[in-house]
Image (cartoon, rainbow over all chains, first blue to last red; front, side, top):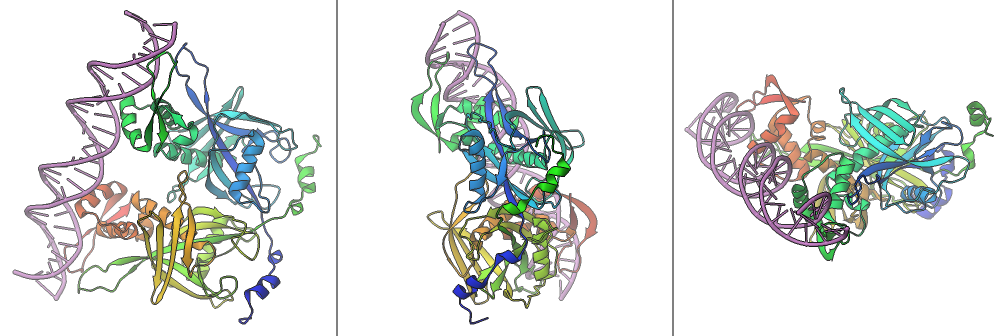
Length: 271
Length: 271
DNA sequence: CAAATAGTGTCTCTAAGACAATATCAC
DNA sequence: GTGATATTGTCTTAGAGACACTATTTG
């Protein structure tokens, strides 16, 4: 054995001897959508939205789930996540990042299935619902993500007349967001926990400016940038203070906006 | 089909139809070790150390790898990671957190194997090397983790006369640390990238005080706490300033140290 | 007393929050 | 001019870094 060459070893080696799990990638895909403008030349407000798909088959038939699917041979799990989003929306995400692995043994009644959960960002996507077996309907849900008096986390997802809710408790671990579902309504599998963790990551990325630009076009105004941060973090900051902080992350171009009914704004680019 | 019950569906459903990857958990386990004291009543300096195992079998025979192993049916991937560390050291880690999924299709010559990479912390562990087939030797390596002039990342691991090195480039992505190996010497698989990402997580956790306590006993002095942060971040801070910042994360007990050849220190507990 | 660590007070500098004031466009 | 957003400047406050100084133990 000790004299065996690597060639010989690999030839005799078989992974088939061990039982293996199925692996999926589930993606929380966020985008910002404009509310209808109330006044005639006001910049429309934005809402943070999450893509969910209504399950057409068992299990959790009729409930709403994150887009996702099985890892295929020859692709990385990131490629799998991007592929699933592209299949569903026709758009490539501008960002994709891992948020966790979900591997509880009872998480899927179909069997031993572990899932890599991702957070991703889409720019202006048109939803193209698939007519397939397991995806009956795809919709954007407005996201509300808050804490209650007991410091539990409340997740509320709204799309027209549909409202999905979950109450979760954050695992006080060492860093990474990690949630346990206390109660939920209308959300499939353990996806409510994935969504909560994704929201934490997204807010973290918006706070330190690392994910702000994924929501913006190539060039943008500082006001647009501020609106992105305010919408994701659900806060409002004073404009001069925002500019001061944002300055170190951008470089100015020599272009300006025009035709907006007010003073033109300088356009900036990510540094 | 649409009238099928969930029971019927699950009975007819088979995951066997799809090819599945093997899944492993690889763990970067850190601890702080004392250097031998130079003076007679000085507190010994500490070094950050990482557990590596010399591979006894192919592939990467004779090179050093993170402890890890295959996910078994009936356990979560976190349990798998804890089990692998416990098997190797006989100690339960005081912290364990996911740092990434490595799923490049060519990352393991044995076949389709994806790996969850974890960062963990051990308190005062005795290494108990396994006499098994694929683990010839287990050792603690002192960690050096720096940047060079081109802003590339240099990883150096030392244990006695053995020195392992790697040069990596950080992927300028959206948040999560992610490294590409430029060159390496003596480190198996893609584990150098896992170690680099783990170091980033560890430093992040030491900076915001979320992982400091995993390196400390139940009660501790502020100086011990400061030493942990300084060692992990490889910085030195002024003591009064450290105390001010640390104060909000601890509560004092009514106990004091004694017999140390200098003024006793108040013992604190994690808040 | 010497050596070593524990702990307090304070000065300065910088970053963040609040807010006043001015600028420029479309209509 | 009016309504809207863009942009600059400044006052105040909170926190971080630097540093001088005092306190308490063992040998």
